Amino acid sequence: MALIVQKYGGTSIGSIERIQNVARRVAKWKNAGNDMIVVVSAMSGETNRLIDLAKSIQAQPDPRELDVVASTGEQVTIGLLSMALMELGVPARSYTGWQISMLTDSAHNKARILEIDEQNMRADLAAGRVIVVAGFQGVDAAGNITTLGRGGSDTSGVAMAAALRADECQIFTDVDGVYTTDPRIVPQARRLRTITFEEMLEMAGLGSKVLQIRAVEFAGKFQVKLRVLSSLTEPDIRVDEEGDSGTLITFEEDKQMEQALVSGIAFNRDEAKVTVLGVPDKPGIAFAILDPIAKANIEVDVIVQNVGSEGTTDFSFTVHRNDLMRTMDLLTKVKKDIGAKKLIGDDKICKLGLVGVGMRSHVGVASKMFEALAADGINIQMVSTSEIKITVVIDEKYMELAVRTLHKAFGLDEPTEPAMPV
Ligand code: ASP
Ligand code: MG
Image (tube, rainbow, N blue to C red; front, side):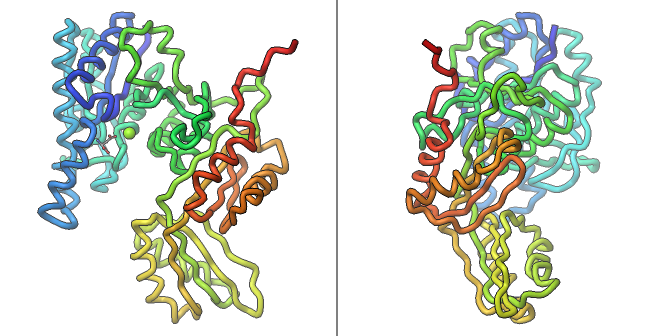
């Protein structure tokens, strides 16, 4: 008998019919002899609706009260799913974040999980009940309701699996796994049967929306076996078949298989580029530029500084698009002190990256990437690399072309199974 945590996202429980399907799926796993914990999101669109309600009263909603409002979507779905399970003859019990004591810090709207009390849940499991837990929400030490940030119920699911030392955490979603890239852009994109934890972390960091990055970090830290799979398949498909479907996030590289150079391509249009032109080329300048930004809690990503000539240099970095205006305002204030000639903000960019543990043992991945982009006349504005990732910033109008070109250039268009030798 295994202990399995399943997490269902908004689209998976977006209607009564889908909630009933989820109940059938959970019942099937339970009846196969497993202990089951189910973590759910709000119905799709519901969290947006709740946040909009708050914003219609306060343009900048009070963070504590926003959590009180935004967390309610999940309270609805846990109750409904528990009822749907009971209708199938499966004993079930729902819990909100505070009822199970999903203890978080007090950073409203982006709280971090600190501890989960497993006592009650152990008793329920022993009594044969399915436990249905509200994702996305927690409670701080003072008893305030907190939420974990958008998409946070992935993290709730992984945290439950870590706390109860589950055998597997299954994240059910509206796609059937992690793909080499977004199939809406490249129809030849393929589902990966496995991806390493490191790669998944880089993919999430680059903007792949399949899993919330915090959930991946959490899984890495606590070595949670994580699988992404579809909730839109026939709910009655066999447990062993379903258990082997989707994408498994592994902790070990597959030694037997010749590692592909690149496992996936991720991209996003959520960032903007800031360039500070003509700053003195001397120690302390990068700090002087970035310090006010860090103090304003704005996250900075790709950073590039040019080689100086005639005592000055240019300094560029990316921030989230929503933070561009604030960043420009902050820099305008310090521009004179820094001695910068000009500030440029550009939100017509996209960030795109190749990810693959296979890169570690190969040279020339970057040059191959640049060659392919050059052949399509795509200019590279910024580059950054890590051991298993190469990121470029390009004009957003070339995003789709670049993704297609690179998907092909790195052999990702081809089927995984090598053709049988004749
Ligand atoms: N319902 C929350 C949101 O929309 C949490 C989640 O779906 O993961 O962000
Ligand atoms: Mg999600």
